Length: 321
Image 1 (cartoon, rainbow, N blue to C red):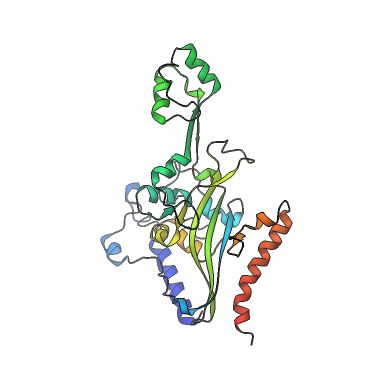
Image 2: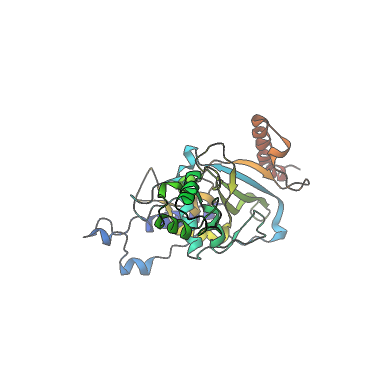
């Protein structure tokens, strides 16, 4: 990256984070005035995500698509996970999952899919159904028989009941403790999968990365979501370019300087996280590493590093004659 491009990135970054620090914090007369910008600030506010430059297909000399996992239990990835509690904290601080879900609900993010190849679109209704599961316990079913409610609710499936049926059962005398509800929130998200493209730009003579998709992962809502041994499931895949405006306006906590928060867009685009490659595009149908390195975590990690080094060597190989 040349000096001019570097300065543009730095200025854009500083301008972006400064304009989204808690506005009017020191001048507010009441708590309601915190976060409200003045008329002059609104006029001068031109904060947008740094636009991607156009890359012609002919300028890509080498490229490879890779899939990675971001483990939220690692300290460096905490900015994507916290805060877990959204009740006792300001509305300006939310986890990445909460930001994505709210934007999908408000239709600010519309490019949401079922897989990383972006083939089948998912609606908010589809996503909502996979985040919450309500069932009736065995004791609850016995209570239904004792109260003579079996015929009234003969059409419901005790393994999966709707919120409306749950409320009706409570009104008919079924204790709330017998209605079991599993719900996935930001606290239950354990990992993120990301899909990106590494390519060598012949115009800039530089190896670059473009993030294409992101997917939150949690335990299956139909099992015990707090069980560490429960199966992880991909909740949905977001086409990243469609989410950039939302992620740029949503800020993560900056532990070193709270007056200059960092946007999720900046964290992800600048790769300020730790991740492990679990899949690469290949002749075997883009098979995952675990599919051919079975039951050996060390070999899986070494294979991931091998793929990473292969990508890094793209740039070095361009300078070998």
